[in-house]
Length: 203
Image 1 (cartoon, rainbow, N blue to C red):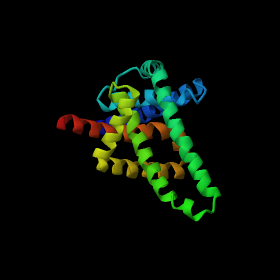
Image 2 (cartoon, rainbow, N blue to C red):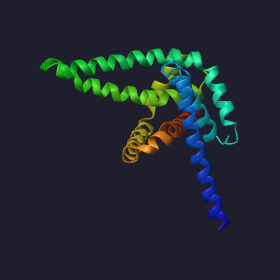
Image 3 (cartoon, helix red, strand yellow):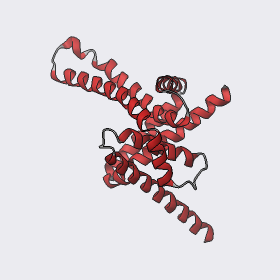
């Protein structure tokens, strides 16, 4: 009975941690006016998740979140400019493909969707790499892209796990608000850390 009680307590404790981290992510995103706050808040969330996955479970969550948010505010928003440009490019391409009936242009849709998938996978590795490696943004993006290419199995697992998460969140929308971002960060950080560790052993 004691073992069962201890297990239940640990599960509830982790549920509370994930919900609290999600709340901090939302609050700090809003504090930065959304546009300037979302990237630093996301980086801070990933940094906390990395600490937890590395066994540092007793850190002061709010204090650590604020430290990462403040320290990486400028660097993360510089990276955000690059991401915003790519997302804008994808959005414009999708708009033109949707609006035109030109047969020649429609042939571009397949490579575009392949590019979108590769870009999303790249982003999935980018945030974990940001908090794991102390690199400038250009070297960071190069590193994340190479890791994505070298570890296709991890990338496939990310897609499957995140797709399952999306299905669950669509069935239970309240969970998306309470745990959506933190669960997403946990999955991508966990698989990325495994890929990073494998690269380190090989190196």
